[in-house]
Image (cartoon, rainbow, N blue to C red; front, side):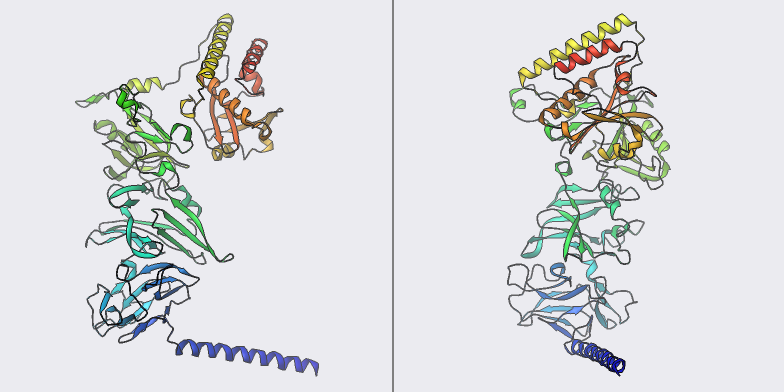
Length: 614
């Protein structure tokens, strides 16, 4: 009996749930809520259309603190997140507005006096039978079946937001362009001063504008992502990027993988381009990307042939590529204005089909603006080099596509000044044309074979010079700057990769102040990685580190190991030296034949506060 009673209660509960569901459907239908309007139907203020799946809602709204009314589309989970506005610059002053789908198949927005304040630019057709809010958030006019080609769609008239399956770019046949335009303010969706477009000359890349001035660019499309936005690889599985280059159109867009969270790309009224993702657990939007990100993202910040380094704040971020430098101020007027134009050290030698010029590699950069560059995706990188070498007007070249791996393929050639070059994680290589004399200066000198007494004299002279340098700069109050180092900076990510994330199996020694690891470069070369312990990274410890890099970068001798690179990132201070098999880093740095003598040298350097303790 008890079991029978429980069964009856269970069946009764199920029956009530079914009735509640049916009642909900009837109420929904009675309220006129759906995803379509038929001819002759209208939508008044307070009514809405909801897309299949429920992700998007179309209706009337007032943004922020404004009392003005607009017709728009927003995310159902976030009513304040509007993705499209019909009457951006023609707001309604009250709640008497009405969206009419007339007998001609046109969408018309009317105010209380039934004057037209906005209409679709579709001229109308007797065949247009339905307007539908699609699951993608696209408001579409079509013939009655969602499979039919659209006669008009809101995706062709973007506001400030790019959704999956939308696109930016240009239709090369009709001349139509798709671009994003910011709101004027948080409370005013009227077209603002910031635009986001796809550059369709050179290689495709996304440009952010303030009025008609470029403020930021993503870097060119390299077959996988936009070269200056390596972050995109982190979410490419959820939101695959799509770039189309054909005789019909040059466009960019993205899709959303099944089950991926809601996402949007927006250009806001402050001039930022952002990608957001909906966090359903916290019911909020999380930011995946923002551009510009840092001062080096400001378009053309360092001028022609300038190279911006986001880790070089102390030097104003700007330097020059190899073979160029900023001339010193020579006049009183020049001294009051910072000169930021990089000038070539030595003139190129190319005329009459002959040249002695060559190419230097600028590694790990966002490639320069390609607007005026020539592009050929059908050649190899070696063929690209030959073309640039034979063309005296060619100043630099790079691979156009890296999707095939290796050094890439295709060809981009610059024949005018390269602009907007910056260092970036996972950046590409730029091959820069330089005079032969500049390339000779960058060649590594052979190791000098000298006798022991001469080696001792050289070391003592170096110590004297180092002591003089320190005292001079102490008096002048000078602080060593990163851009003056003779060794390159490497990122922490690269060091983690070559040491197995500082694996204990790669540890080859440690002391009270540092741990030394063996690292393996991709080409097989071994290196010694000296990682300072966090306990010594006091203010003094950091200054000692800078002094050690400055001094060791300038030392060149057959009996001394060479400092190859260093890392100064966050709380990490790391030195990278050449590696000697089966010998300690100390022995290798100071040699075996003159170990006692070199230990005295090390002691003298420490006494002058040039080196931290090993």
